[in-house]
Structure formats: C-alpha cells, structure tokens
Image 1 (cartoon, rainbow, N blue to C red):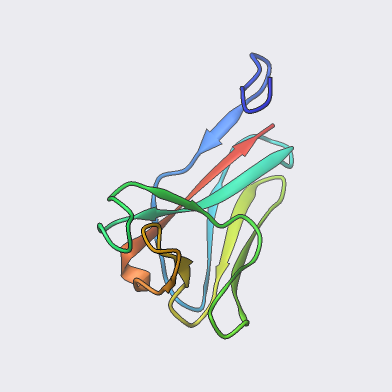
Image 2: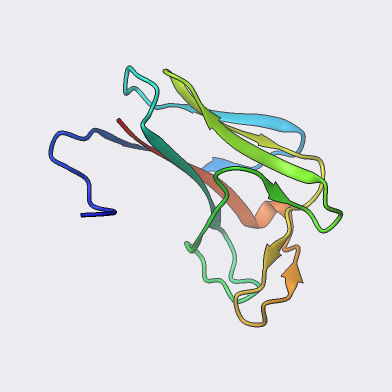
Length: 116
C-alpha cells in the first residue's frame, strides 16, 4: 500500500509560507518525534511555465539553480521541518517545454508535510 497513510500514522501539513531569499523557513510539526518521512513543496502562486495556480513542485532535498550551485534544501528534527532558501531565483523545469525556467521567487510559497 505504497503512498497510503496507515490508520496509526500521524500526519502534519503546514500552511503556505512565503518564500524569502537567504532565509531558513520552518514550521513546527507537532508530531513529538522526528518524522519517519517529510517533504517540502513549492506551491505555485501564478500560472507560469506550464503550471497552474496551486500546482506543487517537490523540493525535498537539494534543488539547484542553473549555475550548478545549491539553491536550498529541506531537513527535519523532532520539532520542526526546515527549508534553507538561497539567494537567487529558483530554477524549475517548464512543464510544457521541458526547458529550464526561473519564474521568480514571488511565484512560489513553501508547504511542508510530515508523517510519524
């Protein structure tokens, strides 16, 4: 049953958090333990590069700019989930063309999920 939450599994979903360059974003998950698994997604705030408003792009661990320098990464501990955000605009793949695109930091928010 891959991808299905078990009855005994606890889940956390954060609200959407505004992206800020050169910052560490975080959300308290309230699970009381380090999550067994977690994810961070960019939530599209504008219809750009083949994405619709509300579409999610997973960013869980280490995503990159076109310069191959890390843009950021996600991590967790027993109380929080974190996303370290770099200084430049994030680069994603255009869903329509497959080309690299940089829609601008203001077109994303971050949402965290965790399971324990």
